[in-house]
Length: 199
Image (cartoon, rainbow, N blue to C red; front, side, top):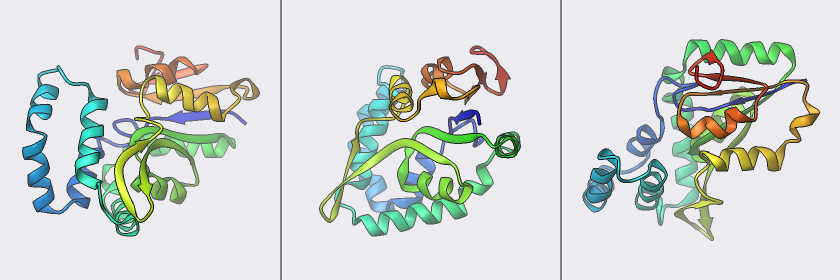
């Protein structure tokens, strides 16, 4: 059994799902207020002065803080069932099937949110490492449990969970600089579907 590590957004899907989910799960009024509150941060991100991790973290806080967990979980389930299927990359799904046929252990490793990824991964019978939204009692805080699962955090969480030396071959698939540390762990890295770190 080999190990296959897959980034989600842009690798398994044709585009980022984070913003799509925010627009799907958050009320129009809260979206508008959030855009106004985060306007300076969003402008800084577009100018390249604010990191993606910073903007994602801020958006999640504004979008989800105070939400009832069951309701948000249900919206995540619906998003996984209704929206993700139309975003899937055929090439990626064929590769997932190939790894299944080989009997490999498949893990999605993503900065995207557990709110919808856990439902999609369960349906696909694959394992998941991702950004997790914190629940405090009966309310969602909007904060991340253990931080944003990207870059070096992807590497750390993979190594915490899996003993890589126990697998004959480790495959990894990614499409951005946020996947570099994960790709570096692999015997066979694929960057934007071309074998090698640089594609």
